[in-house]
Figure 1 (cartoon, each protein chain N blue to C red):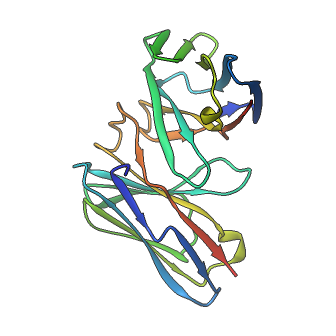
Figure 2: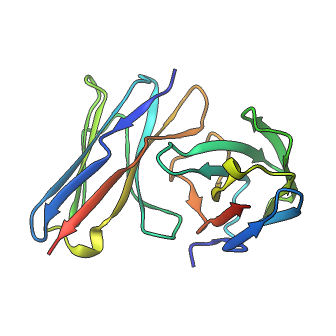
Length: 115
Length: 111
């Protein structure tokens, strides 16, 4: 157990479905992140939350909607996705945004397949 | 801008040393990291080095940093089959505080 837990581990959804990815950390960290990992592409930072406020949104399509109700939980709500959105979605946390002395702690990811 | 580059693939024999290389462009990098990703798993922090250091050793791992050339390397001594994974180089800078990753180097260890 890495300290960052993501559910579900695998998700298959149709293009008209609505689903949510969940991330949970109990490390006392104040910053949380969503990354997208596609085959043969660098890790893409999608969203950053610091103290429950969104501080970064890297031109992500609106069909991805993040939510951070408290510093321990982060969600990624998905709707009307496209097949090219199929990827591994990784959640990470750190003590503070910009305070990366010890790097980020990653979850195991959710493998998303859009059909 | 920030850019981190790595070679994509390295193959070694069990027992040999592996050296994975990384170059970065941002001279304001503060910390540099090596992460390991095993199949079906997330990223695991292996080690990190502060930008005012030029070497760090941790058991079988040796990190070398050449700040002048913006070059970072990870040496794994006595490489084992369990070391087969994707290794990511990453940096944070004082400008953004964000963690920027390279494309990852796939290490294949042959018995």
